Amino acid sequence: MSYGLGLSEKKQARQRRTRFFKFVLYIALLAGAGVYGYYEGQANADRRIADIEGQVIVLTSENDRLNDQARAALDKQSAALAEARQWRDKFENEIPSGPTREILDLVQTRLADGLEPDRLLSLITLAQNSQNCDAAPETKRFIVNTPIFSSPGNSVSLGNGTITVTGNGKSVVNSEGKVEAWYDPEQPVEITFTQLGGQKELLTGVLPLHKSVVFGANEYRFSILAGKQSFATISATRCDFP
Image 1 (cartoon, rainbow, N blue to C red):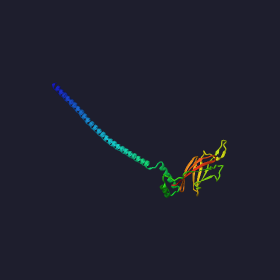
Image 2: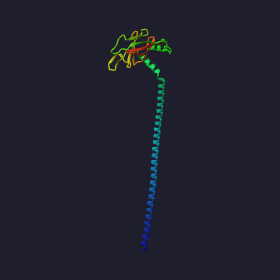
Image 3: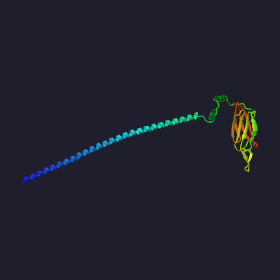
């Protein structure tokens, strides 16, 4: 009987040891799994941190590249604006304006009309501020032709017969709406200057009109004013040219 009890106690002791070792093994496995999980998590965290750091480096490099491009673009823009200002200043300083521009335009016009460059150059060279002009202007009056009254004899000669002046205008309309024979001084007129030999100059506009005309070695400064009915008055001052 006591033998059976001894065997039972030994068996129970073995079972207790077995359970203890199993418990210890379980705890060890749990600890190992925990340690493994910790180190694996740490490794994953390190890899993620490394990946993030790599992305940060790439993004920083790209940001630096874009900043360099932006600075280069700003530098180019600044250079372009500076060059544009230089060209604008050069244009404003070198392109003539005012009377100089008008003179150049007139020179181009006269050259286009067939005036010889040498002739134009000599005239410009001889030009001076002081001029030799006649003491008093020559003043005459003439009839201005209209569509219903025109006569070949309605002209006036100036400059000792070297220049003939004729005029054409629009007929005046009276209060009854009827057209009269004389011209309307409030409407544009057409004045023709004809030099002895056939050369002509034309002047158009509303009176009074003023024009400087060069014929050969003489410059005539004309002023045409409205006169009494049908008439216009012309004054001419002759000056040496150039």
